[in-house]
Image (cartoon, rainbow, N blue to C red):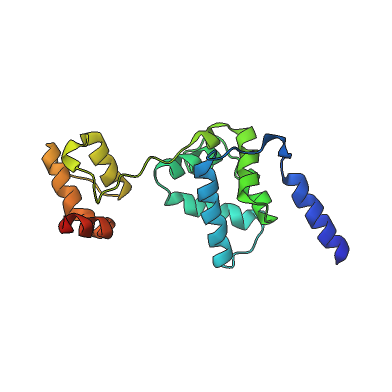
Length: 180
């Protein structure tokens, strides 16, 4: 039994990249955040930690991913339209409980685009003046919520739709706006 534990530890350490190319602060933020939540969901749902099961769960999780996280899934090969498949570079280390930072560090060597992904800055809906925002940014808010604005032509149409949906998607911001 002790031999198996030593072997597992040695194998996990061999999968961890050398410390010479450690990630800098803020680098790979989408990868670390997404895989961190994914790994935690695997633990919370008592999923068996083997490569095949992790790959299947990753593909299932990526079906619901949006925005930058969907792009990350594409780069990892976990979407149906992906050109390459490197999900085994994620599933194998995660099956040995390698930290997600180290997994992302290794992925960076395979495809540098993975660590170039950054989350868009979040708009503070409680204080922002929607009338001063660009239509493109108003559309982006709706897109993040998974909503569309059919028949919206004018900027005021998008603003009306956002104000209409704000209590559902950003209730604290909606409440703060009514108190102003």
